[in-house]
Each structure stands twice: as C-alpha cells, then as structure tokens.
Length: 264
Ligand SMILES: C[S@@+](CC[C@H](N)C(=O)[O-])C[C@H]1O[C@@H](n2cnc3c(N)ncnc32)[C@H](O)[C@@H]1O
Image 1 (tube, rainbow, N blue to C red):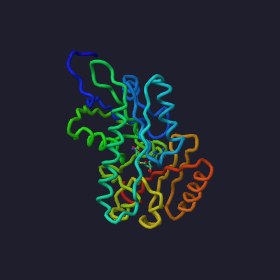
Image 2: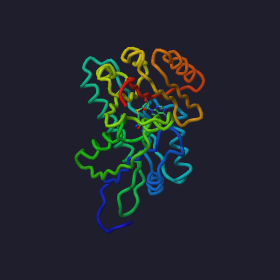
Image 3: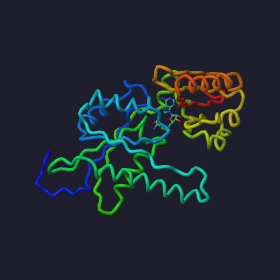
Image 4: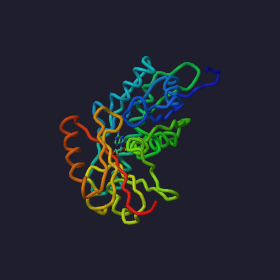
C-alpha cells in the first residue's frame, strides 16, 4: 500500500510474532501470513539462544519469506552482579532499545509507507519474553511512530500439556505460571504450578515428595524428553536427562507442571 503522505524515518509497522516453542509445525497460519507480509525481520539474539534455537527462526524465514531482509541484533552485555540491580536493569533495557533503534535506522525503507518490521518470538510473546516491552519502549521514545501488532504463538506451557496429554488445571481450579526462582513463594498453596526458566531444579526444594511433576525438555524438537511421576521418584531421572541433553545437544530448555495429589 502506498500513499502520498510524508513518512518519517522513524515510523514503522512492528509485528511481534510468536513462532512456537521449537517445532516448526507449531506455527499458526496467522503467523505465516504475517511473516509473508513483512519487509524484513529484526532478530534479537539474546545470548542464551544457541545456534539450533536461532536456526528455528531462520528456517521459518527460509521457508515462508526467503527474500526478506534479516537484521540480527546482538543483545548488549549485562552485568549480572551489579551493585545497584535496578539501575543496571534500566541501563541494560535502554541499551537494548538503542540496539533495536539502530537496526530500524539501517532498515531499507519502502517508498511512500512505513516499513513492516517483524520480531520473531520463541513460543508466545505474552509469556516471559521481553520483545514486546522493548518494542513498546521504542514506541514511547520521542520522534518515533511505531504501530504495534502481536500475533500469538503456541507457548511451551501448552506444548508441555499436550505432550503429556493433560489439562493444565484441575476442574474449576487455578493454575499458576511462574519461574524456578519464585516457585518457593507459591508451591505451598497446593495449586498447580507451571514452572519456566528453571535452570536450578527448584522443584527439589519447593515441591513435596509426592507431588506429581510433568516435566518436558526441548519440546517439539527431535530431542524432546518427557518424564512424569512423583517428585521423589523421578527427580534424579530429570537431572540425568538435563545433563544428557546439555552434553549431547548443547542446550536444554525445560518446563514442568507440579500437581499435588488430592482434589479432582
Ligand atoms: C524466556 S522463556 C520464553 C517462553 C516462551 N515465550 C513461551 O511462550 O514458551 C524460556 C523458557 O520457556 C520454556 N521453554 C521454551 N521453549 C521450550 C521447549 N521447547 N521445551 C521446554 N521448555 C521450553 C523453558 O522454561 C524456558 O526456560
């Protein structure tokens, strides 16, 4: 679509697109449509992503939009043990927005309209992902005109429930989505917990031995591993599977649901 109006260099149509948690078939038709309409993609390389995780996104582009422009933005370095944690997070956050702004400045601009720029997000953009926050921060900067659209994706939480063929909640009950770091704050409620971002096996300290854990790693990839059972019985199997994935595949991303045996 072209128009005669003046388009500023700082105007973009930003599409934040969830592409699923690892299985290239777990991408929605809406996401494919959106990818095909992009002028290009800004790939945020968040450091923790390994080559094979990056490959999922580049393979999707090769398949659905082979001619699109791809700009890779490296995540700026972050001090993980700063004296002033809040100040360091603010500085790092601003540096990430700067990096995106620089990439947008390098973006080829179509005549007469704002470029349509995609951000491909692992899983779903609404869960434990900062892309939308960064794009919103760019939109809030003076002089920028950013229209933000979001396309939902399959989250690893639903991929986990599907892989184990379970519901995420018990009848009429809540399910709490949290991180390994904060599991101890809510595990004692006895409600179901879905735990992401747990590199330290927080279930060992926070769960009861007879809680059932439904665990999944590298879901949707050829190296997917599923383990379920009472925590006391399967905790060591989970540790062994994590170590095996790390040495054999080079990366492990795992998620689990903890369920206290009783109600239902
Ligand atoms: C930064 S969060 C991103 C979550 C993502 N936005 C989503 O909707 O799944 C990364 C965490 O998601 C979970 N995760 C993502 N992909 C996964 C996969 N294929 N298998 C298992 N866990 C996964 C893990 O808990 C991992 O630590």
